Length: 378
Image (tube, rainbow, N blue to C red; front, side, top):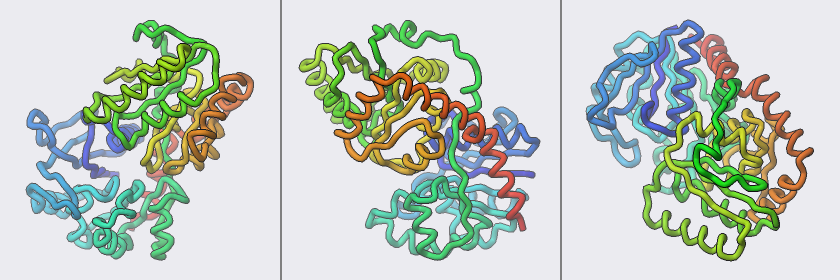
């Protein structure tokens, strides 16, 4: 098949959508399909068109969305969609320009079109009310609407509006978790290894909830030396940076055994090493759809504790690699239990690895996408 994936951002940009799009593109290609990407030309240094890893990248100088306004040559993109002969077009996520610019001409695209809904995060925002009135009329035009959860707000929205062309395909972890990693994370990053090490991987933003992780850590009743290690990109908000630093200061002031570390722009190999060498993964994001890091934690054999966000309950049930807590007090108690019960954590670790190999890796999940494309092609 000749497959086009439309996503707002793509590599070298870094983020959850970019990671999923790249994994799908590479795995589709490995199964013998011809793959193209339509995405943003967000940097002047990026070529408008190029081939990377046998994937044809088409970049458009368009930004925004339907609600905030579309900026750029929208007609050029619309012509691209209607004139090129693809067997499948997959729009990855709503509320972004690669889908929103296509909404007026969806019925003119003479091929099979699919939408990965990715959460519909704007559903609860007043400003997006009109957008979703329009979108629900368009969702019937897709061969299938692909959801990553059966109980998140996008799936509930589809059910409420009697949109039955829906298919569940979960997220997953990269195939590289099967590979051996010989890096020593603590030595490489000059971290004094404590009795236990708690890991949190997410970009440094308020919605990612690093402050909540610190509060859970503050409440933790654990007497041996322990590290809370954050890995993310550079802080893009000075207010959040100073807020986090204040929380770090007070935690370390009151507890001599607790240390909090912030690592920025760590290499992927280094991140994989952090997964494999830590004791517990703590996830306290405020807003998610289907967090990739929980799948990655399971794949690495690292037991996780998550607050209730996105479809974390489903991921916990699917992978059997971690638990979900209702609040920071419960999370702190569970974290203390994990740190003191190696046998229990060992069971979660084995569960995670087993279920990652069995299903929740991008090789297997890519096949599920391809099966949906084949089954629901016109």
